[in-house]
Image (cartoon, rainbow, N blue to C red; front, side):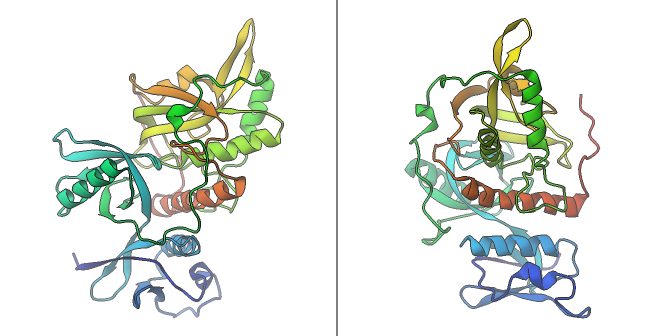
Length: 357
């Protein structure tokens, strides 16, 4: 394998990279596109690779968001071979049972991450994560997608993102045990609203600026849930959210290995009338279910008998609180639309062939 260089930094390109890859923007025999980074560094994007358009779109998104990108380049040619997204992560739990990998979960991502003990920087990264956990401080973490193997951990740069995190309630743990329920809706209305959510689904490989990537279930559930709540509110309903946490796993034909792992998960709920009985909370989660389902069925699909549940008002944005406008949430969702298109570019569109017991 050819030697690789690692470059982590913010790009400073004069032109939108995605536009340079558009038909007619470059002559047919044009060479790689130069990607410029802060610190007078650069790398080359091979536009002949099928994934080049996804990488260009991701770098454009990160640049406009004032966030760094992680690339591995061929040491002799400077061509980008791998590209990942460093995250401003807040450590929630570190589970080191002595096995081949250490499991790490974050308040800032629902995915369950792992740190490979065979990685040459394993101990350095683990120590940095433990310090961040002890200090309850954000740290810059890069992981592969959609495997979520941690490959780089470092201090968060002083300038990251475009604005301070949105203000809101201080902690999910402080949320009411049982928020005041809204008026129940009929089963027909529930299916109508569910279909409204499904109609917003992204088309793999062809994601648009406002679609919701239900077919990328590995991460981003809190953003999907928030955008769904805005749609429900716009239709005159008052949803809530239900949060699960544990060592969650769910079968999904929308990922190549047919299984997603979460440290926590969230989706909207509404009270739905039941024939011959009182109304019950139903969960609206197109990433996991084909229709609204009772809370008990929703958590059963996540296959952790020890998982815990917590309701919250719909306005809560992520696990540790905060709020977000629809515009902010839609912008945050863009990264996961790009991930969906990247997965489609590498593996083809879902559904994938899965054998589910």
